[in-house]
Image (cartoon, rainbow over all chains, first blue to last red; front, side, top):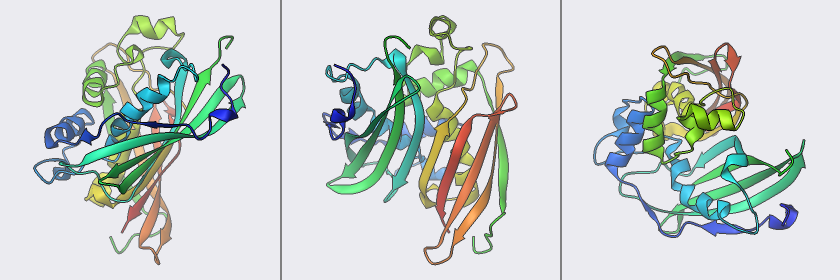
Length: 139
Length: 136
């Protein structure tokens, strides 16, 4: 099935909440070379882009939708944006739901935008807006 | 941060990326796409070399803003376009990512500032429309 506008509105929840741990935040901060003390200890908050990881399980569901037929090796991450209601903190249990918001064709590729809403206990924490392009069979 | 004005420059940052840094980020982020560590996988897709994860470049560029803000919780919005890949060779030199930023708008009513970020590698801008909103 070709990717088209009829895919807009499809939602993909992560199968279970992501339990944010202080050591995972520290590991992530070290991987980006950031020694900011805010990222250490029991009260650690997560670096801004940590949120992308929390949406990755929802993204896996989206990528695994056989009706979309996306292939990881044909996908290019074009743009990413985060809007935070509050920072992600150690101890949070974060639910993620990705929803396709836009599908359009551009220069032989399908450009897909999706929003991943992150919540904790039903309260919104952040919205991650992603733009990916997917090259077709002939591209 | 009461003296922030349009045009205020943020302290710049240069980060050297080597292959080991990509492997470390792959582990920390869970993004094990082989184009971020395997020359063979990158070549099979016609890429110019092993590429840094876009999300790693985005994270490194954010450090200019969070270092300046002090408390990363002040960053309430952050977005980028990935315009050029950052090629990271398998050698000891690696690739330098140079990040700079400046304040382009101040909203006194909401107590926020907009910051434009420039990230360059190998003499080319690698991010487009890189912008953060910071609570002052």
